[in-house]
Image (tube, rainbow, N blue to C red; front, side, top):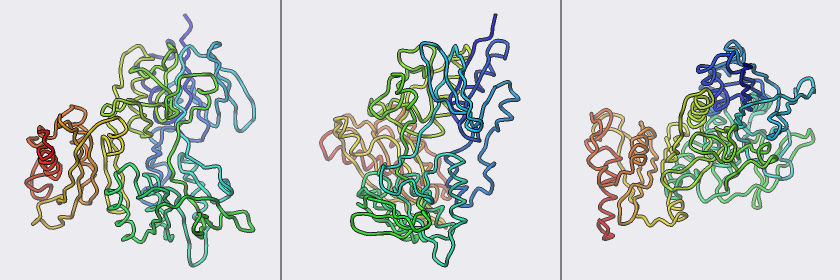
Length: 462
């Protein structure tokens, strides 16, 4: 019998994890695998790009987990610089365009994996496509940005970062390390909209202390260019900010144009909808994973779009298992994310106040100040923890942490507690590790849980 034909659209985390896992389970005689990637690179860490740009990671290739040649050596027909331009669902085929030769061709499939990722948000504003304005989503994007940074000369080199989410604050740090004067323009109330504003204020204060100018409630209206056509300044309604380079850190959107064109089901955030096996709803032979899908938020009970390499690789493993004859499911997420700007660590998991209100949950919150080590131990530094719990039930809803000295990874224990559906009262008795170099006697997470229990009792719910 002829081998089944698997086609994969997208050569990064989800796509190549799916292809690799399927190949582990089925050899070339049983399953032929063709993968299309429109860029030059495969299986790389997009999350590492800010650290490559900032100089923490020395070489671009350090971010590549597996090269195209390594995939091809495992009998995966990987075609780089080749973009899929059309999906024919009924005919079970995809049309691809070789971006170098300009040639177009159809490839048939029995099973299809869509792993098209996400694209940087680029508002339709004057000058947004000017030279020197960069989104940062792929290794090609990172190289283009580095080329712009090298081109910027003069005694004062100025970078403007548009947006103050994870990408924005990480790129602000990278620009600072490259010796640029950095201005971050944020249309929101505070940086890091994934946090509540009171916690975002802590990030703002820290960025100011590092020499990064952060301007809130600053909606960009245009990019002004110079005589050479390159970016010269970023305009808002209130001011003009000179710039030799502009980095877009506004966020990303699911790249689902192909799916939308053929009527595949999309969620409220524009991502593909799948079942627990990552199979596209209503289509037995099509799977999707990574940044182009929506996932179930286990706390809110709604789908969300979360672009993270951790999820993408898990999706790929599950898809590859199911395509290759095994079985796997992806139950959902609790929304855990960590980041940093210089030595300030930022973490969150679960719901913010606005998220809880959006799904009709009543809640109490508590915020505590602690340290990452015993107060008397050398190097102990402050940490702020905010915790939310459901009114009456006391169910943990979310945590946000801003601090230094190992603050960010403390969120992991909270993510486990959220996944387990624990109450904050139950959390107070968790048996966490203690020694003065690592934690006070009462870990900051447990202190926050105790204070949240007190808030519940004061509200008459516990």
